[in-house]
Image 1 (cartoon, rainbow, N blue to C red):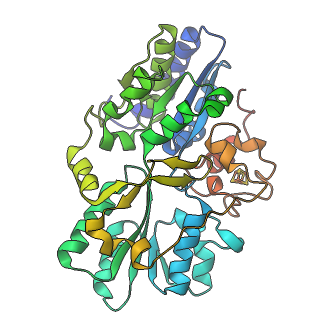
Image 2 (tube, helix red, strand yellow; image 1 turned 90 degrees about the horizontal axis):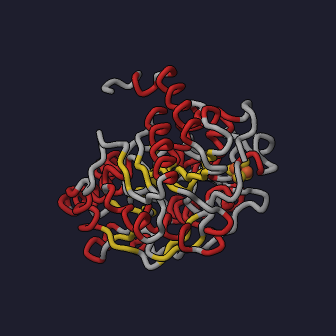
Image 3 (tube, helix red, strand yellow; image 1 turned 45 degrees about the horizontal axis):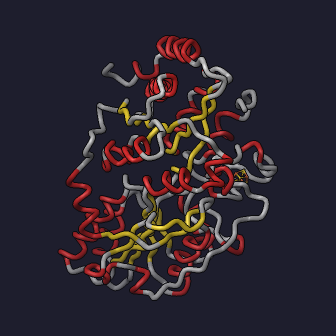
Length: 374
Ligand code: SF4
């Protein structure tokens, strides 16, 4: 297949659904789609409706906005309010609920100089245009968005920019999967038969990064693209692995992902970032070696150091089930606020903010359909 409409062919999807139904011979298959992009695709194209009842997809924690804990948004708001910086970030991040009923958007309405940007390059441009102001880029995301942040820091260093820094919240995919598989309570409560591996992340880190999950944990992984036929094909490949007792890393997204990934991007990241000892993820809690910080050699561009920020953990709204949803323990409809108090216009938790969030995807596309399979 070559063109995007072929990857969205209803006829081909029906054929693939029939193949899945024919080959799903076990009583239950539980696969986690790690990436929020896949969660979105499954909801948008109604793929859950095409699967037989014994095949259940479980949403994972791979939405960068969703896993950002409240305390990190609070840090950004403090930068804008107390240090009077120009705070730049992506649009979705502006709406994530923070402490005290605030969000970056509300802090902006109250006078904070908070700006939506499309990329870190925009923040760098603002810093060059306004040398009298401190400009901080609130960086979020997995390995996909990390190389551009690294490139911006290299560029700021080359230009000798003294008014640009990054509040780094970049997190890593493999440690999150390891955490889910190696934490006994999680593994017991959410038994998984395999993973649909993220597509964009894998273009950077390569399929090799998932090999320990197959070899050590005996979990099949199939890396998939984001079109509906990509996802269905990956599910079929996972079913075939389970049926034949295999646990391998397979690459459905071979038009974009290689085994080694993007070596240049990896070198960029390694040049600027190093592992944090620990980082709090919404829903998964503190996870060792699961996120990045800026190396000492680039400390001048590290907003946490420049502004001496101290992180304070803040609990989620008591009725919000984002934590359980991000661990695969609950589904969005099981939250009593879903679609009532909490909606994309009025998000109570982070999973209702981004279109990649499980709650937002279910609200936008899935709530009128029959309940997902259990
Ligand atoms: Fe949190 Fe809203 Fe999702 Fe409930 S519906 S889990 S409150 S984001």
